[in-house]
Structure formats: structure tokens, C-alpha cells
Length: 283
Ligand SMILES: [Zn+2]
Image 1 (cartoon, protein in one colour):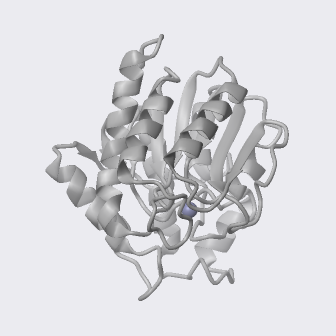
Image 2 (spheres, rainbow, N blue to C red):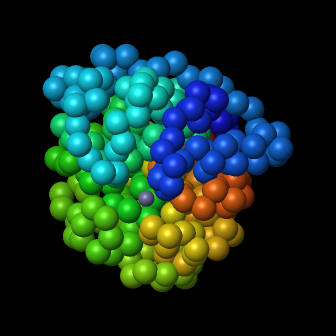
């Protein structure tokens, strides 16, 4: 699996903000040591973003005309957010894993939030137009992704996340959006059981699997721990690989920089091993 990355996504930060560059820097360095190949993305264009977001939202991000304590108005954030969306587009076309920041799953058609400006995974899914299963393993509910795809017959959205956590949505399933809130620090057993149930409910017939890959379910994560050890990400990867359709992944959260690399590598190795045992081959 190729890794989509650009040094440029490390350029911006605010001291003390949990969504800082160290988390992606250490992730990239770890994957480089493991011999992964890196591809540089292009920034997403208006036409890519407008498949998901309103014209007013594009103007809002471009002009920095927003006020959200979780989404600082970094200079040039429009470029960095477009680059992350472009990373997701490249991940989709190359069956890769985009590790760019900022993340995306809290950004909706007409709103930003939770460190997210544009919804990267949604931009990629809409560009392909394929019948897609999105599985969001970040410890927070992807309220933006749900808002964008609710009622879309081409897409099924599955999210496992910590109950009563930011942003407060995703407490129950609705339509094509299947939500599985889990108790804090529930651990691997319940998590994997729930993922199996979720995938069974999602059904089959998908042409593509898109993963919103957050690692803030790790046991010591300050924002969304579900009590998972690094090895759990291998098991999650195996289960998702067994879905047996072409797959790409986009980074969401994860706030302990030191575990980002090992957790991401475990997920990728699981995806590869799971695909090997699935009934239909992954292209
Ligand atoms: Zn998260």
C-alpha cells in the first residue's frame, strides 16, 4: 500500500494544540523506516471540493472567515486543507493511505469543526462515484461524513466511536448511516465483536472500501480512548481486509505521536493479510 504524504502538511501549528505536526511527522518517519513508498499529492481543485461542500464553504475557508476554537485560522489553511483533500483523491486512485493533515471527518457540506476544514474522505468517495462502504474507526463520530452521505444510495457509512464524546452525534443508526457508540476504554474484545456486527449489517455489493483511519482509540489517547493496544489495529485491518474489495484509507485523528507509526503499520499489515484470506481478491 503506497503512502500519500507531503512535507508541506507539517508546516502549520499552534503551540499546545493537540492536532499538531508531530503526530504525522513520527508516523511518516516510522513508515519510511519500514520501507513504504511515498507519493506526493496535488491540492484539490474547486471542482473536487464542490462535489461535497457548498460554494459558501469554500469561500469561508479561503478567506478564513470562521470562528471555531478547534479550527484555528492558520495562515494558508486553505492550501493545507486542499492538499489533504488531494491526498485522499490520490489515495483513492492508487489504493493508498493518505497520512496528511488536517483531518476531515468532522467537516460537513457547509460547516467545519473538530480540527477539520474539508471532508477528505468524502471528496475522494464522491470523485470515484462508486458504490462505497466507508468505515470510520476514529474514536469520534464522523458527523460531517454522516451529514454529507445521509440518504445517499451509493454509500453506506459505518462508525465505531466513543459514546457521549465530541461532537455528540452518532448515538444511534439512521438510514444508510450505521453508528456504534462504545463505552470508554471498552477494549479489543468488544470492539472487534462490534466491528463484525457492523460489517454484517452493512451487507455486501460494494465496489470500494474507504477507511477513515483514526488512532485515538488507543488506550492512552487523551481524547477518545477505547482501550485499544497497538495490536488491535492489526486485527481491525484483517477484518476490513476480509471485506475483499479495493480499499483506500485516509488519516483522521490520533493524538499520541509515538504510537501513530506502529498503529498505522499494524492496520496496513492487517489489511494486507485480511485481503489475502478474503473470498474475492483485492485489486
Ligand atoms: Zn478522533
